[in-house]
Image 1 (cartoon, rainbow, N blue to C red):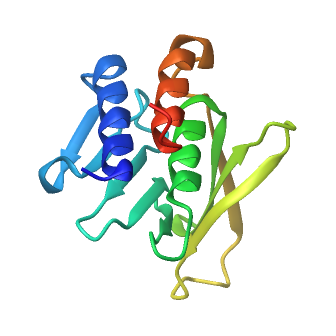
Image 2 (image 1 turned 60 degrees about the horizontal axis):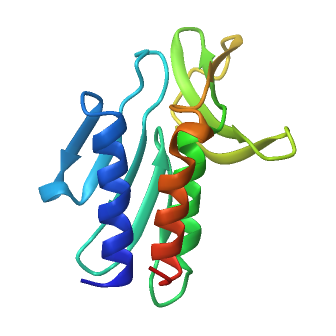
Length: 160
């Protein structure tokens, strides 16, 4: 088992311990989704494929971390941050037609940072734009999982 596979399994264990009824597993447990309690809010997810590529997502927005190019620990840190930080999704409509979503998270400085944007080009552009913001708190308070996060981070840096 590689260091990244071990880190992924420790994250999976953390999720199963704290959110047993809100976890969805796909791809034989290599794709994990943490569903929100409120269906208006977006889920966060993490996937580690057979080739070692890590994908971290919030709603539809996601980032890929390639083991030969990127530091996978950045992806693991991103997912752990999504567990505890405030997030928001801004939905844009033309009439009742949704055409754009922006996913943001609150960083350590208290400012909002864009994580990703998705949109479609086929929409009724002549209609009035309506904007709807859905705010979302962290899934869990940092103090509840601080020791587990430290163990995961020590695994990431291979100091277990």
